[in-house]
Image 1 (cartoon, rainbow, N blue to C red):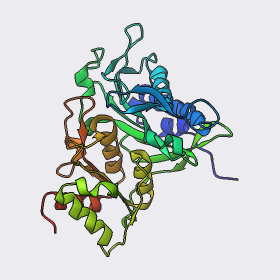
Image 2: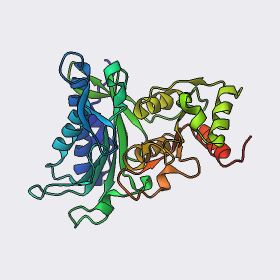
Image 3: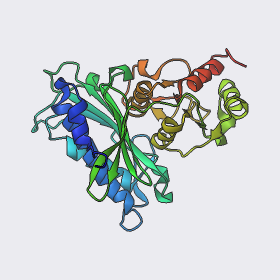
Image 4: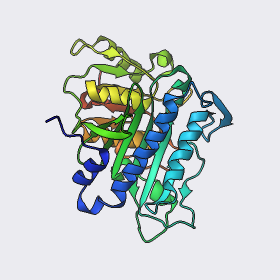
Length: 330
Protein backbone atom coordinates (compact mmCIF):
# COMPACT_ATOMS: atom_id res chain seq x y z
CA UNK A 1 0.00 0.00 0.00
CA UNK A 2 1.20 3.52 -0.76
CA UNK A 3 1.61 6.33 1.70
CA UNK A 4 -1.70 7.68 3.01
CA UNK A 5 -2.74 11.02 1.52
CA UNK A 6 -3.58 13.49 4.26
CA UNK A 7 -5.56 16.55 3.20
CA UNK A 8 -5.22 19.83 5.03
CA UNK A 9 -8.80 19.46 6.29
CA UNK A 10 -8.10 16.02 7.81
CA UNK A 11 -4.82 17.19 9.32
CA UNK A 12 -6.43 20.23 10.90
CA UNK A 13 -9.23 18.17 12.42
CA UNK A 14 -6.77 15.59 13.77
CA UNK A 15 -4.23 18.05 15.16
CA UNK A 16 -6.28 20.92 16.53
CA UNK A 17 -7.24 20.81 20.22
CA UNK A 18 -10.93 20.28 20.91
CA UNK A 19 -11.62 23.97 21.58
CA UNK A 20 -10.27 24.92 18.14
CA UNK A 21 -11.95 22.25 16.03
CA UNK A 22 -14.77 24.58 15.07
CA UNK A 23 -14.21 28.09 13.80
CA UNK A 24 -10.41 28.13 13.87
CA UNK A 25 -10.12 24.93 11.85
CA UNK A 26 -12.66 26.16 9.31
CA UNK A 27 -10.93 29.54 9.13
CA UNK A 28 -7.73 27.78 8.09
CA UNK A 29 -9.67 25.99 5.40
CA UNK A 30 -11.17 29.29 4.17
CA UNK A 31 -7.65 30.73 3.85
CA UNK A 32 -6.53 27.61 2.00
CA UNK A 33 -9.46 28.05 -0.41
CA UNK A 34 -8.37 31.64 -1.02
CA UNK A 35 -4.89 30.30 -1.76
CA UNK A 36 -6.31 27.91 -4.36
CA UNK A 37 -8.16 30.73 -6.10
CA UNK A 38 -5.12 33.03 -6.07
CA UNK A 39 -2.93 30.16 -7.34
CA UNK A 40 -5.32 29.64 -10.25
CA UNK A 41 -4.78 33.25 -11.30
CA UNK A 42 -0.99 33.17 -10.81
CA UNK A 43 -0.69 30.05 -12.98
CA UNK A 44 -2.57 31.82 -15.78
CA UNK A 45 -1.16 35.29 -15.21
CA UNK A 46 0.32 35.59 -18.69
CA UNK A 47 -2.84 34.30 -20.36
CA UNK A 48 -5.49 36.46 -18.70
CA UNK A 49 -5.72 40.17 -17.97
CA UNK A 50 -4.16 39.95 -14.51
CA UNK A 51 -0.62 41.22 -15.13
CA UNK A 52 0.45 44.83 -14.77
CA UNK A 53 -0.62 47.72 -12.57
CA UNK A 54 -4.18 48.39 -11.50
CA UNK A 55 -3.61 52.14 -11.83
CA UNK A 56 -4.17 52.76 -8.11
CA UNK A 57 -1.99 52.91 -5.01
CA UNK A 58 -2.53 51.32 -1.61
CA UNK A 59 -2.25 53.01 1.78
CA UNK A 60 1.51 52.39 1.71
CA UNK A 61 1.80 54.58 -1.40
CA UNK A 62 2.75 51.53 -3.45
CA UNK A 63 1.42 50.92 -6.94
CA UNK A 64 -1.18 48.15 -6.81
CA UNK A 65 -0.89 45.24 -9.19
CA UNK A 66 -4.08 43.75 -10.60
CA UNK A 67 -3.26 40.52 -8.81
CA UNK A 68 -2.81 42.47 -5.52
CA UNK A 69 -6.39 43.71 -5.78
CA UNK A 70 -7.73 40.30 -6.79
CA UNK A 71 -5.96 38.55 -3.88
CA UNK A 72 -7.22 41.11 -1.37
CA UNK A 73 -10.80 40.95 -2.64
CA UNK A 74 -10.71 37.15 -2.62
CA UNK A 75 -9.52 36.83 0.98
CA UNK A 76 -11.92 39.48 2.22
CA UNK A 77 -14.99 38.14 0.40
CA UNK A 78 -14.37 34.58 1.61
CA UNK A 79 -14.22 35.72 5.24
CA UNK A 80 -16.52 38.69 5.78
CA UNK A 81 -19.75 36.67 6.12
CA UNK A 82 -18.77 33.37 7.73
CA UNK A 83 -19.41 34.24 11.37
CA UNK A 84 -15.86 33.25 12.29
CA UNK A 85 -14.27 36.71 12.36
CA UNK A 86 -15.00 39.95 14.16
CA UNK A 87 -12.42 42.03 12.25
CA UNK A 88 -9.75 41.96 9.55
CA UNK A 89 -6.68 44.01 8.65
CA UNK A 90 -5.24 44.01 5.12
CA UNK A 91 -2.12 45.62 3.73
CA UNK A 92 -4.23 46.92 0.86
CA UNK A 93 -6.82 48.73 3.00
CA UNK A 94 -6.23 51.95 4.91
CA UNK A 95 -8.24 51.11 8.02
CA UNK A 96 -9.07 48.00 10.00
CA UNK A 97 -12.13 46.16 8.68
CA UNK A 98 -15.05 45.42 11.00
CA UNK A 99 -17.36 42.64 9.91
CA UNK A 100 -20.48 44.15 8.27
CA UNK A 101 -23.35 44.39 10.75
CA UNK A 102 -25.63 42.32 8.53
CA UNK A 103 -23.41 39.28 9.22
CA UNK A 104 -22.91 37.35 12.43
CA UNK A 105 -19.64 38.20 14.16
CA UNK A 106 -17.08 35.62 15.28
CA UNK A 107 -14.30 35.50 17.85
CA UNK A 108 -11.17 35.77 15.65
CA UNK A 109 -9.25 38.54 13.90
CA UNK A 110 -7.49 37.89 10.58
CA UNK A 111 -4.54 40.11 9.60
CA UNK A 112 -2.97 39.55 6.21
CA UNK A 113 -0.76 40.65 3.37
CA UNK A 114 -2.73 39.32 0.39
CA UNK A 115 0.18 39.26 -2.04
CA UNK A 116 3.67 39.63 -0.64
CA UNK A 117 6.40 40.41 -3.18
CA UNK A 118 3.96 41.64 -5.81
CA UNK A 119 6.72 43.55 -7.64
CA UNK A 120 7.84 40.09 -8.78
CA UNK A 121 4.54 39.22 -10.47
CA UNK A 122 5.32 40.39 -13.99
CA UNK A 123 8.69 38.59 -13.89
CA UNK A 124 7.07 35.26 -12.94
CA UNK A 125 9.02 35.06 -9.66
CA UNK A 126 7.71 33.41 -6.49
CA UNK A 127 5.23 35.47 -4.47
CA UNK A 128 3.16 34.72 -1.38
CA UNK A 129 0.32 35.44 1.04
CA UNK A 130 1.06 36.01 4.76
CA UNK A 131 -1.53 35.84 7.55
CA UNK A 132 -1.93 35.89 11.30
CA UNK A 133 -4.91 35.04 13.52
CA UNK A 134 -5.75 36.55 16.92
CA UNK A 135 -8.60 35.76 19.28
CA UNK A 136 -10.75 38.73 20.31
CA UNK A 137 -9.87 40.27 23.68
CA UNK A 138 -13.55 40.32 24.64
CA UNK A 139 -15.56 37.83 22.59
CA UNK A 140 -18.81 39.46 23.73
CA UNK A 141 -17.98 42.62 21.78
CA UNK A 142 -18.31 42.87 18.03
CA UNK A 143 -14.73 43.77 17.18
CA UNK A 144 -12.60 46.82 17.88
CA UNK A 145 -9.33 48.39 16.81
CA UNK A 146 -7.73 47.21 20.06
CA UNK A 147 -8.55 43.62 19.09
CA UNK A 148 -6.42 44.15 15.96
CA UNK A 149 -3.46 46.05 17.45
CA UNK A 150 -1.79 43.10 19.13
CA UNK A 151 1.79 41.97 19.54
CA UNK A 152 2.89 38.76 17.85
CA UNK A 153 3.01 36.94 21.17
CA UNK A 154 -0.82 37.10 21.19
CA UNK A 155 -1.18 35.23 17.89
CA UNK A 156 -3.03 31.93 18.11
CA UNK A 157 -1.92 30.96 14.61
CA UNK A 158 -0.01 32.22 11.57
CA UNK A 159 1.07 31.04 8.18
CA UNK A 160 1.85 31.81 4.58
CA UNK A 161 1.15 30.50 1.10
CA UNK A 162 3.84 30.53 -1.57
CA UNK A 163 2.98 30.55 -5.28
CA UNK A 164 5.93 29.19 -7.21
CA UNK A 165 6.79 25.98 -9.05
CA UNK A 166 4.14 24.54 -6.73
CA UNK A 167 1.69 26.18 -4.34
CA UNK A 168 2.43 25.48 -0.68
CA UNK A 169 0.48 26.31 2.48
CA UNK A 170 2.54 26.51 5.68
CA UNK A 171 0.99 27.16 9.06
CA UNK A 172 1.36 26.84 12.82
CA UNK A 173 -1.27 26.94 15.54
CA UNK A 174 1.29 26.66 18.32
CA UNK A 175 2.05 22.98 17.79
CA UNK A 176 4.89 23.15 15.27
CA UNK A 177 5.09 24.26 11.64
CA UNK A 178 3.47 22.08 8.99
CA UNK A 179 3.57 22.26 5.18
CA UNK A 180 1.06 21.25 2.53
CA UNK A 181 1.41 21.22 -1.25
CA UNK A 182 -1.48 21.84 -3.62
CA UNK A 183 -2.17 18.90 -5.94
CA UNK A 184 -3.74 20.63 -8.95
CA UNK A 185 -5.20 17.35 -10.25
CA UNK A 186 -7.47 16.90 -7.25
CA UNK A 187 -7.56 20.51 -6.07
CA UNK A 188 -6.47 19.74 -2.52
CA UNK A 189 -3.58 20.71 -0.26
CA UNK A 190 -1.83 17.52 0.84
CA UNK A 191 0.51 17.17 3.81
CA UNK A 192 4.15 17.08 2.67
CA UNK A 193 6.17 18.08 5.75
CA UNK A 194 5.39 17.92 9.47
CA UNK A 195 7.12 19.75 12.30
CA UNK A 196 9.52 21.79 10.19
CA UNK A 197 12.60 23.06 12.05
CA UNK A 198 15.43 25.33 10.96
CA UNK A 199 18.49 23.11 10.32
CA UNK A 200 21.25 23.52 12.92
CA UNK A 201 23.74 24.52 10.22
CA UNK A 202 22.45 27.47 8.16
CA UNK A 203 23.05 27.80 4.43
CA UNK A 204 21.77 31.16 3.18
CA UNK A 205 21.42 34.83 4.04
CA UNK A 206 18.80 36.99 2.35
CA UNK A 207 19.57 40.72 2.42
CA UNK A 208 19.34 43.22 -0.41
CA UNK A 209 23.04 44.06 -0.64
CA UNK A 210 22.26 46.68 -3.29
CA UNK A 211 21.31 49.16 -0.54
CA UNK A 212 24.29 48.35 1.70
CA UNK A 213 25.48 51.98 1.68
CA UNK A 214 22.18 53.17 3.22
CA UNK A 215 22.39 50.87 6.27
CA UNK A 216 23.65 51.90 9.69
CA UNK A 217 27.22 50.84 10.52
CA UNK A 218 26.18 47.92 12.73
CA UNK A 219 24.12 46.37 9.93
CA UNK A 220 26.96 46.93 7.45
CA UNK A 221 29.39 45.13 9.77
CA UNK A 222 26.93 42.27 10.11
CA UNK A 223 26.56 42.02 6.32
CA UNK A 224 30.37 41.98 6.01
CA UNK A 225 30.51 39.17 8.58
CA UNK A 226 27.89 37.16 6.69
CA UNK A 227 30.03 37.32 3.57
CA UNK A 228 33.27 36.34 5.27
CA UNK A 229 32.39 34.09 8.24
CA UNK A 230 34.27 30.83 7.67
CA UNK A 231 31.98 28.50 9.64
CA UNK A 232 29.64 27.90 8.02
CA UNK A 233 30.26 29.47 4.64
CA UNK A 234 26.97 31.11 3.65
CA UNK A 235 25.56 31.90 0.22
CA UNK A 236 23.43 34.92 -0.59
CA UNK A 237 19.92 34.34 -1.95
CA UNK A 238 17.44 37.21 -2.14
CA UNK A 239 14.10 36.99 -3.95
CA UNK A 240 12.48 40.14 -2.58
CA UNK A 241 9.42 38.32 -1.26
CA UNK A 242 9.41 37.79 2.51
CA UNK A 243 7.32 34.61 2.23
CA UNK A 244 9.55 33.10 -0.46
CA UNK A 245 12.85 34.03 1.21
CA UNK A 246 11.62 32.85 4.61
CA UNK A 247 10.41 29.56 3.15
CA UNK A 248 13.74 28.73 1.55
CA UNK A 249 15.61 29.64 4.71
CA UNK A 250 13.25 27.54 6.82
CA UNK A 251 14.05 24.50 4.69
CA UNK A 252 17.82 25.03 4.39
CA UNK A 253 18.67 27.30 7.30
CA UNK A 254 19.38 31.00 7.02
CA UNK A 255 18.28 34.54 7.79
CA UNK A 256 16.08 37.09 6.05
CA UNK A 257 16.91 40.69 6.83
CA UNK A 258 15.25 43.96 5.88
CA UNK A 259 17.00 46.60 8.02
CA UNK A 260 16.08 50.22 8.40
CA UNK A 261 17.88 52.47 5.92
CA UNK A 262 18.20 56.12 5.03
CA UNK A 263 14.97 56.12 3.01
CA UNK A 264 13.03 53.94 5.47
CA UNK A 265 14.30 54.79 8.96
CA UNK A 266 11.45 52.84 10.54
CA UNK A 267 12.03 49.82 8.31
CA UNK A 268 9.76 48.67 5.53
CA UNK A 269 8.16 45.39 6.64
CA UNK A 270 4.77 45.79 8.34
CA UNK A 271 4.79 44.61 11.95
CA UNK A 272 1.21 43.44 12.40
CA UNK A 273 0.58 41.24 9.37
CA UNK A 274 4.07 40.43 8.05
CA UNK A 275 6.80 40.55 10.70
CA UNK A 276 4.69 39.29 13.60
CA UNK A 277 3.32 36.19 11.84
CA UNK A 278 6.76 35.28 10.43
CA UNK A 279 8.37 35.67 13.86
CA UNK A 280 5.65 33.42 15.30
CA UNK A 281 6.43 30.76 12.70
CA UNK A 282 10.17 31.12 13.25
CA UNK A 283 9.69 30.66 16.98
CA UNK A 284 7.66 27.50 16.38
CA UNK A 285 10.43 26.14 14.12
CA UNK A 286 13.27 26.81 16.58
CA UNK A 287 14.20 30.15 15.04
CA UNK A 288 13.87 33.77 16.07
CA UNK A 289 12.64 37.12 14.79
CA UNK A 290 14.07 40.47 15.91
CA UNK A 291 14.09 44.15 14.96
CA UNK A 292 17.79 44.18 15.83
CA UNK A 293 17.22 45.03 19.49
CA UNK A 294 14.30 42.92 20.71
CA UNK A 295 11.98 40.10 19.75
CA UNK A 296 9.44 41.02 17.08
CA UNK A 297 6.87 39.06 19.07
CA UNK A 298 7.08 41.53 21.95
CA UNK A 299 6.57 44.78 20.01
CA UNK A 300 3.15 46.34 20.52
CA UNK A 301 1.90 47.94 17.28
CA UNK A 302 0.45 51.44 17.61
CA UNK A 303 -1.04 51.58 14.10
CA UNK A 304 -2.24 48.83 11.77
CA UNK A 305 0.40 49.62 9.13
CA UNK A 306 3.34 50.23 11.47
CA UNK A 307 6.70 49.28 9.96
CA UNK A 308 9.72 47.67 11.55
CA UNK A 309 13.23 46.48 10.71
CA UNK A 310 13.24 42.68 10.43
CA UNK A 311 15.78 39.93 10.98
CA UNK A 312 14.14 36.50 11.04
CA UNK A 313 15.33 32.94 10.59
CA UNK A 314 17.90 30.67 12.21
CA UNK A 315 18.33 31.74 15.83
CA UNK A 316 22.13 31.86 15.81
CA UNK A 317 22.22 34.22 12.82
CA UNK A 318 19.53 36.54 14.19
CA UNK A 319 21.21 36.75 17.60
CA UNK A 320 24.49 37.54 15.86
CA UNK A 321 22.74 40.38 14.00
CA UNK A 322 21.59 41.79 17.33
CA UNK A 323 25.17 41.71 18.62
CA UNK A 324 26.46 43.75 15.70
CA UNK A 325 23.58 46.24 15.80
CA UNK A 326 23.97 46.75 19.55
CA UNK A 327 27.70 47.29 19.07
CA UNK A 328 28.67 44.16 20.99
CA UNK A 329 30.42 42.41 18.10
CA UNK A 330 33.24 43.44 15.78
